[in-house]
Each structure stands twice: as C-alpha cells, then as structure tokens.
Length: 111
Image (cartoon, rainbow, N blue to C red; front, side, top):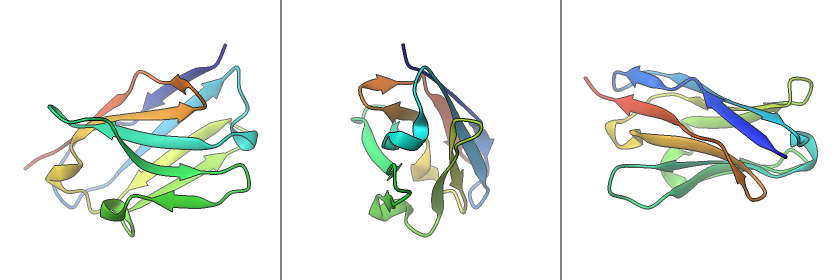
C-alpha cells in the first residue's frame, strides 16, 4: 500500500518561499512519475509539476521559473521549492504517485 505524506505548507507573504515535501512509503519514487497538484477553494484540482523516472521535469506555465520539483531517492521524498509566491498560489497542495494521493498541505500566500 502506497502512502504519501505532504508537509511544509504554511502562511507566507507575497514574494516569500516555501519548500513542500512528499514522503513516500510502499512505493519507490525513482521508478514512478511523481506529481504535485493543487486545489484552491471553489476550484478544481490542477496539475502543477511532475518529475519522471528519468528525472525530466515539467511545469504549469503559471509556476515556471518560480517552482522547482526535485527528489531525493535515498529519502524516497519529492520536493516542491516555491519561490516568489503569489496570492494566486494559495491552495491545498497534493502529491501523487500513480493513483495514490497524499492528504495535502495548505499553502496560504497573504500579506
């Protein structure tokens, strides 16, 4: 059974940074596509970024140049470094592996 546990969310001012973590158990992140999604209040869940088993990365246009997805295969953990955060980045952030999802971590960007 795959379990994904996100952490690292919080309240940050516009222009600030946060690093989200997604610790996986029951599955190996290095051989799976790992993705981050987010869901803002009243909106549908949307894809943010992913990293493939080969290490290739892709980003939603709105976060390109500000967010970086990475992984630590030893820790079996995926990260999302978020810089220059904007109020529109406020959402519940989830990581996913195949059909499995974590419980999410809240990111709030507000002054």
